Length: 182
Ligand SMILES: CC(C)(COP(=O)(O)OP(=O)(O)OC[C@H]1O[C@@H](n2cnc3c(N)ncnc32)[C@H](O)[C@@H]1OP(=O)(O)O)[C@@H](O)C(=O)NCCC(=O)NCCS
Image (cartoon, rainbow, N blue to C red; front, side, top):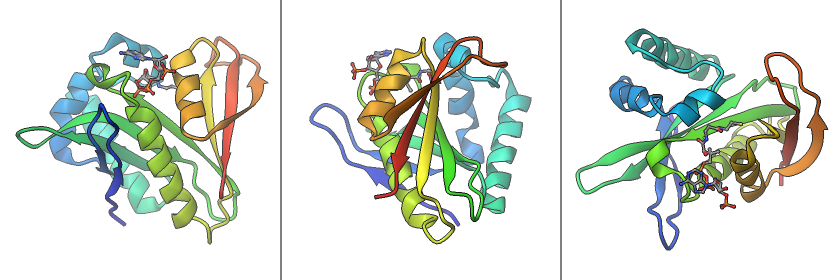
């Protein structure tokens, strides 16, 4: 079920194109994961070619199984397009009303609203695509010491719901945000 989604440009940033990961994304994916902030907030950082191959394989398997949707976010450039972010929709289960989103933005693309626009596009797609499967709410979790992620939640329509107590593997309390199907 390949998809292509788009997010509108802003006055200061180009539009976004969202699609499943491809093998040809490997170099840009590895480069993105060299960023220390991304490594800090990712539970399974990609540190070499083998990790990237496993990531791309898991992505393909998730799409094939219809339960985990790993999405590359690209911006147009003069010569083509470049990878700027990742959005993950996970734990989609028929009959279960909720699923979860996760995301990162490549270091060089931060501060231009990439993650909120990409999360908004994926969320709208998910509610339309999985309405018949009973999906009524999407959850977004982040640790309290990640205010940039809290801003992404707010800007992409995920209302704050509650503080989650710290529990392994998360050393600090977290926030749970929720966006409901329109
Ligand atoms: C959190 C993250 C995804 C935000 O992505 P983004 O595309 O930069 O999103 P935005 O442009 O909307 O910026 C969100 C907030 O980041 C902060 N920010 C702004 N410019 C920034 C920059 N150049 N670099 C870092 N953070 C910046 C601001 O607090 C901003 O909020 P504001 O719009 O109210 O000022 C990104 O910082 C990231 O990838 N972090 C590491 C991975 C991560 O934390 N993932 C989420 C785990 S729950």
